[in-house]
Length: 240
Image (tube, rainbow, N blue to C red):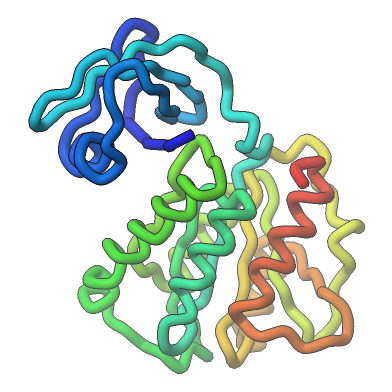
């Protein structure tokens, strides 16, 4: 069933406009009487099309329920900016796995060093990738890709989560299963770039209460580590 997103749902009538309306009417060639799903704030509205005009599609909700695909935890991925176009792949795969928010971070060991203004030009494209992946995977929300933040800003945000963890291989850490996740609803996950995380930044994170975890003895690429870590988090919180 086709899937679309809107900011606010309504139990009586939902109206889709703009690109979504054109896609329904012209690309999918849907007609009144056919059904589709609209997601709003984690709620699925299974709707019947009642009317299609040149710039709007009018829908009547016939069944309303929380999106079954949405995890019970909100995971924010704090991702050190990688080289080339690896962040696009990370956004896509982590959206499929259930991430709620992706915060690109500029750390000391990042090889790619965009300015906030330069990164802003990429942010819109990354958000579109998140939207497409959310539709494909049946999500109830579109994860937000934020603007670029500094390490200091990321550390402050991670301290506001119920619990935050970082992958840190250089001087040990615990397995994910040893992290006290019970009762946590907002979880921060930090992943370094190709060069990992510097010792000074790691010490700052430890002093801030961030838990060090490891994924075993194999060395994972920076685009592989987020999907592996997020999969483990979803499994440990009964969301996979």
